[in-house]
Image (cartoon, rainbow, N blue to C red; front, side, top):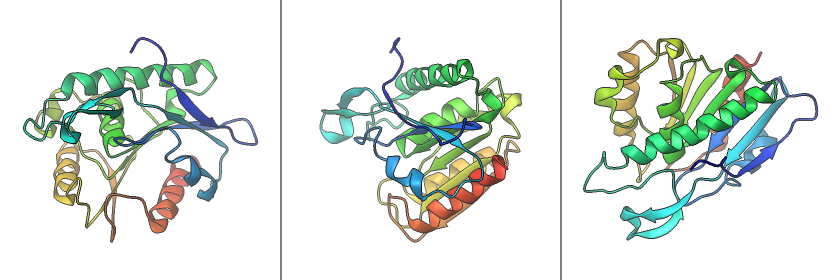
Amino acid sequence: MSELLETVEIEPDQPAAGTVIWLHGLGADAHDFEPIVPQLTLNQPLRFVFPNAPVRPVTINAGMEMRAWYDIDPGAPLSGEAEIRESAAAVQKLLEQENTRGIPTSAITLAGFSQGGVIALQLGLRSNERLAGIMALSTYVHDHEHLSEEVSFASIDVPIFMAHGRADPMIPIARAVTSREAMAALNYQIQWHEYAMGHQVCPEEIADIAAWLNSIYP
């Protein structure tokens, strides 16, 4: 994954005050969250960058090839670690590209849904430079039991928005709560939201995302 990931970008009408790099979930693509951007009432002009995950076989889906940040094997929950690290490194290159476009890391938010959220947390909690924020939607921390061994002191006060559906059949909310508690134990500040929904995004959540983005880009 030496080349830059393919992306879909939405530019604001005015020069961007910051960038949100937003990662899709398993089997989706870079267009998945594109329609949400016009629904966000934002105080600041933000650039949205939506990367495409590579196409790879996915064990949990009978080896079918699809866009995935890492393989999921239900028989080995930690088996995707090498691919998670590889995907995080690929997203780091997008972050560095934003730096060259004049957006400092402190004005970049990493966002992700489901698998994409795993990568956003993987990279964001280990970043040597403080981000504007991390948005983790319907997701979890990979290998939370060893999180303390790798977290970055630079990221310890980064604002984290974490949201989950109470009826999520794909990633049970208990897994997200366990991840939240693992981060809270390390003094991360998490704004937690839960909704009466499944593995999806709802209008109330979109409004909460906008409010949170406005709090970190005042």
